[in-house]
Length: 157
Image (cartoon, rainbow, N blue to C red; front, side):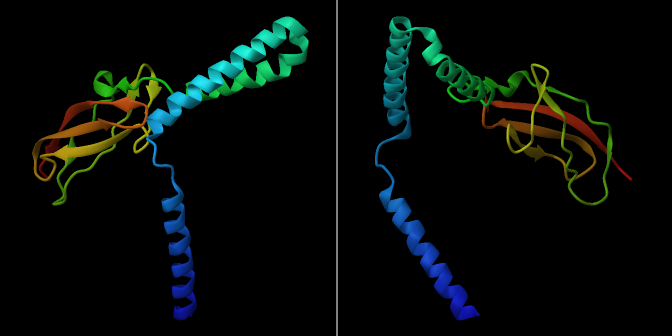
């Protein structure tokens, strides 16, 4: 079994190495600019054809294109990142020190949208290993950038 597992691992490792070697050497940002330019040119051509040949032939394409644009806008693609500095966090009630660092997951909102831990932000803690005032530091992630923080109290047992 161990020999079979080792052979499977080696096979997957070689496949992964080949995938890495085949990756384009260009920066994704540069490729994205090129693709965006070509995409814009294609859309302009299709709009011109729709004007010449009539919109009914291209209505399905336009609907599909609009649905894709809406999807990408909703999921933060090609949009500037929002600052997490303006995040609203629900206050955290006092916590009891039990001999271990106190870790709480705050509810975080930006513009009435509830953010998701590990998707929209990561957390770090300061002074959460004893009674007193602890601090939670939010680090923006995904569609969010920057840092925000809030404090909460840890009381002795």
